[in-house]
Length: 105
Image 1 (cartoon, helix red, strand yellow):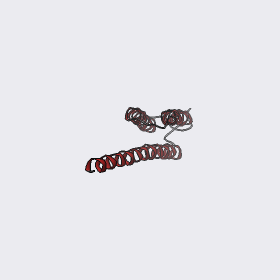
Image 2 (image 1 turned 60 degrees about the horizontal axis):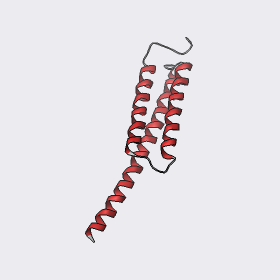
Image 3 (image 1 turned 120 degrees about the vertical axis):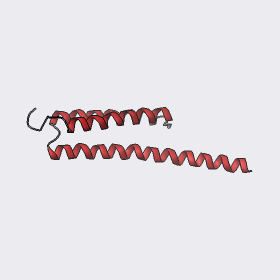
Image 4 (image 1 turned 90 degrees about the vertical axis):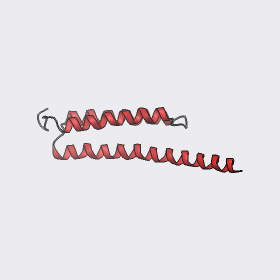
């Protein structure tokens, strides 16, 4: 009986952890959208930079949708998406902090 209870508790914990991780991926995507929008408003991002960053963001979302299409989102798939989100985050930072300003491209 204790084994069954601990197994059920483990399954619940894993499913809850998966939901939390999915939310953190969605939250990161949202925050990156906000960062891009702020870069547009401040003039730190040029039109071409914004198009490139948004294209990269769309590719990540498409990849995530493909991973989730089979009803499973494995740990390896999560790692791949997080890796892509990390790269996008670095790209946003680099584009916002380079010497390009809106109106020069």
